[in-house]
Figure 1 (cartoon, rainbow, N blue to C red):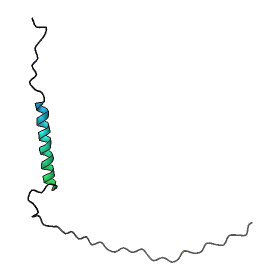
Figure 2 (figure 1 turned 180 degrees about the vertical axis):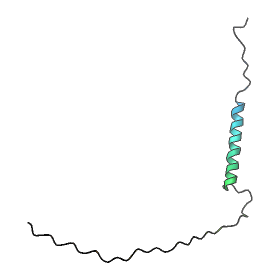
Figure 3 (figure 1 turned 90 degrees about the vertical axis):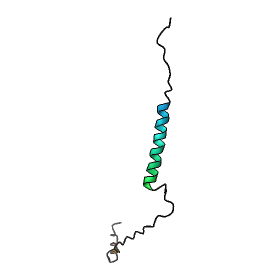
Figure 4 (figure 1 turned 30 degrees about the horizontal axis):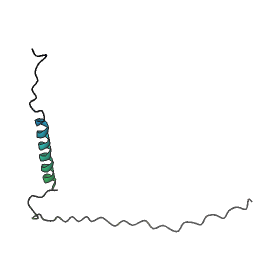
Length: 74
């Protein structure tokens, strides 16, 4: 007679393999979407962005006043 129930291992690693494959596919799709991987080749056009900022100058100030001479207090 058997001592207990017989457990048959049906290969539990299959779920891990599917998860790894899905993760790799998701990363590749993300890289394609963000433009890191360019499938179309070098046919993209350059986008030139020019930002014109106004010139900022510091206000004109006079030279700082000379400090007062120390008192002869000894």
